[in-house]
Length: 424
Image 1 (cartoon, rainbow, N blue to C red):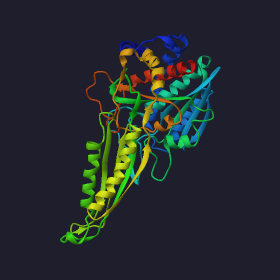
Image 2: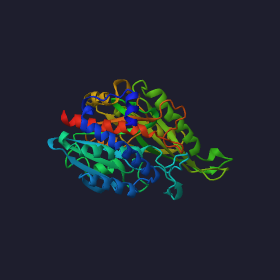
Image 3: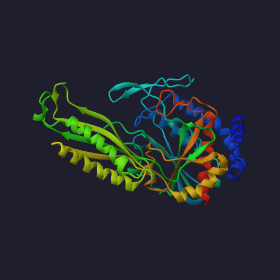
């Protein structure tokens, strides 16, 4: 009850479905379990496509609740299906279960000491993005809903997704592979909800954006072909390093001079450049690798088109050749406006109107977007920072921390959204 008092102090309303005595009892019982699950998963993190222990823990829990379970989906994913006592639509809830190659650096009693291999190197492994909280929250939602089947008008599909941070090189994985393997079918999903904990948003706060909320992420590779020569005689060759510099400069003008940034943000970043092996040799070729982030489909198409045109033209102007290949990594995380409008009253009822805030789009990416290509989706952000804390750490860093008192609001919100959506 201590945590329920905290929610009341934060202004979180206990009305609507939340006043249901059965639900209230179940919420009170589940919080400590969710925290324990989260801490256990945090202490035993696993990298993408290798989440064997985590998947086993999830599957065992779902089966204990009488939920039909499929394992081995997209390598290590787990899918649970809970049919309510009444007929209706199908709503899906998603949690990602993978960790990151980061060595944890904090004083938590349940900090990770796990090491593994990543890209041929020994690395520390850490839940440095909060996927452990997402998993524990969804396990809690499954338990609450399984005890309230009489309130479910339809079916709830629980999707525990591996490899959100991306599969290992040479492997498929993540949401895209789950979609390929039919996770949004049999039965067909009518709507999907997901959340992401945020270490720099106070506990008790939920933030969201209608429409494009997280960026499409693309990976590009630019290959420049020049002509090798002695470094003392540049006139006898074609310098691919010079051409690369001009291309990098040109790509930024696509953003700064051709993109209407008052509509949505966009980013082109060159993250790696490789060329040459000796100080006095102009090399024959160069390679650049980077990322494009967009929040609008038309903008994405235009940026891609201009990149390919510009790379080739600039190289030709300096006597060389160049190609630009662009590959999708994630789609735009697009919150269906009608679904947002439909579910916003539920979120406001559960969290309190003052605690539900709109936010700007972010240029980070989420492969939840692939589920949203198959059915209308709503993805929101859950506060995980101790209120008043001025020493929070960003995601994907060794010092990342989450306040466990924020997890119950995640359980309540996803539970009530599911019930209300199916009731409507």
